[in-house]
Length: 236
Ligand SMILES: Cc1cc2nc3c(=O)[nH]c(=O)nc-3n(C[C@H](O)[C@H](O)[C@H](O)COP(=O)(O)OP(=O)(O)OC[C@H]3O[C@@H](n4cnc5c(N)ncnc54)[C@H](O)[C@@H]3O)c2cc1C
Image 1 (cartoon, rainbow, N blue to C red):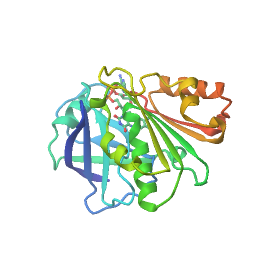
Image 2 (image 1 turned 90 degrees about the vertical axis):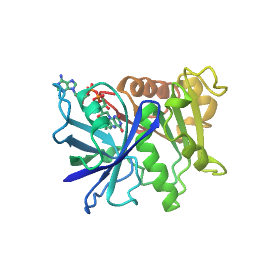
Image 3 (image 1 turned 120 degrees about the horizontal axis):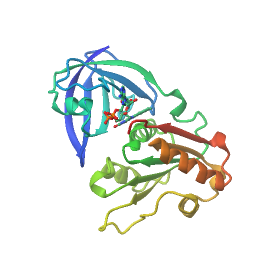
Image 4 (image 1 turned 45 degrees about the vertical axis):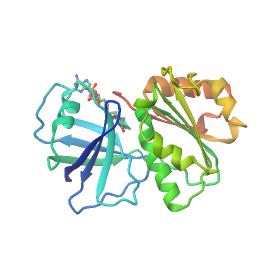
């Protein structure tokens, strides 16, 4: 389906949020899913091509647009996306990722673990659950280098304030001004914040190495494999 860049804004250090106007069409998706995109007639080219997939960050309740966030890097794709003006055409392809969406069992408590841009699928889930009044019990562990690179920080803090169903553990691994948690996410850190770790389902989104590492830390806490879901942001 053809779509057009509607607007773009810098939402954190070197991080671009892009809204695509679906030109009167709608796309059915579940929070947590991703979309395929091809840039049409981009200004830069390289051998990695013009096709990528990105998690959808808006809620499915917001019709007629698809929103993504990405780090600005030097691939031709990313440079083109940064330079393309609102109104530029793109091709939005298949939606995927049904295996990384909110569980049907709304009573089972969750832990979301996001590395940097890995927050993307979770913000859609959190927005949707809160809009629909679905009281998932969520602990979000969100790791970034520093506050400047952490996307949606203000929104997440606002959403968590006074909300007994959403706890946020912010981790800044390289921020001298940060007085909160700085450790990498391992079994010790998880056990410090999650009471009865085996009672929860874990959803992890980040680069494949991080996801694999955290999954093996969860196994040390006796979390069964079937209660660990991961979305590998390959290429990230
Ligand atoms: C389920 C899923 C969700 C994702 N969601 C997000 C998101 O919300 N935000 C985000 O920023 N990123 C997301 N990503 C990663 C995203 O698709 C990009 O891979 C990533 O942003 C890096 O793009 P790049 O252009 O900077 O990197 P590059 O390294 O230039 O490109 C990476 C992509 O190019 C392909 N590639 C690499 N080398 C070659 C080559 N020589 N020839 C052909 N192809 C090649 C890789 O397979 C990979 O798909 C997601 C990935 C997946 C799988």
